Length: 121
Image (cartoon, rainbow, N blue to C red):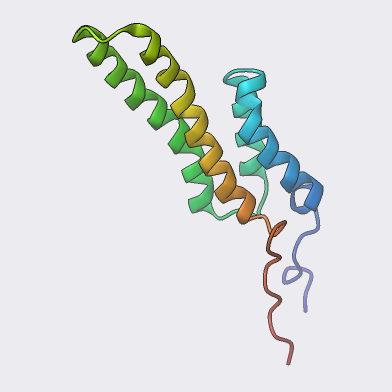
């Protein structure tokens, strides 16, 4: 086994980092809107633990859901729907979407179910 074959042992592969990245991604936007979520997203992208596909899902779901919900809310408001329930929906739905993505990231960390070890011959 050469040095290139060995997995890199960096802070971004450490268990504590994976847990922190998912928590900041999930809750950062609720604590510090937009910036907290972006910090969590950067942490996810810096780690080789997640696949590129998982990273793109994390990057796209919350903004796309937010934009779609906002557009639907504007249309419904124009149709005469009361704005109080729409404001709740606009606030809650993107957070729920982000939490769903966070659960997927959490499952991919190996924290809940450790990744399978390759068979040794």
